[in-house]
Length: 219
Figure (cartoon, one colour):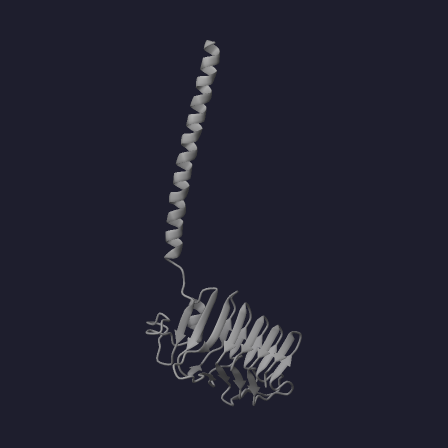
């Protein structure tokens, strides 16, 4: 009987000890999880970024009151899903490289229904937009080649490009090469937009080399 009581006492002690350990682990896990969540929430990026011709990439933070100067800066700072709002006509002096797995919407910010333009300058010596990874959607924005003659298309797409809802790609003139407005090697969806006044050896508006194009309600 004494042996039986001792075994029972040992079993009870083991059960109590196990319960205490599990309780401490659960409390520690919850505390640890809370700390991690706090740390992560402190570094969450916004979903909306603003760009203005009077903004700054050095002192701006991409808010509506303190916008960036360039789309590239806004893209680099953006979270994986974000909208970049163009607050007025902006001129781009370098290629906008979209080379991350992000889902970006590039659109106009306006209080009077004006569609703003992203305008190419002679300083751009490559594609105006290189859409290499992720998904880029253009909405209510104009990409303007400014009738500058060179050897590069307005947009080079090797990923997914959507041109929707009053977006326009125009005035790109490509010499000795194909694809004036868009050179497509990926997936291109066009709906309710305008591709016009672009020139190239072949495919002044769109040149599709090995990708696919779905055209709906576009000009």
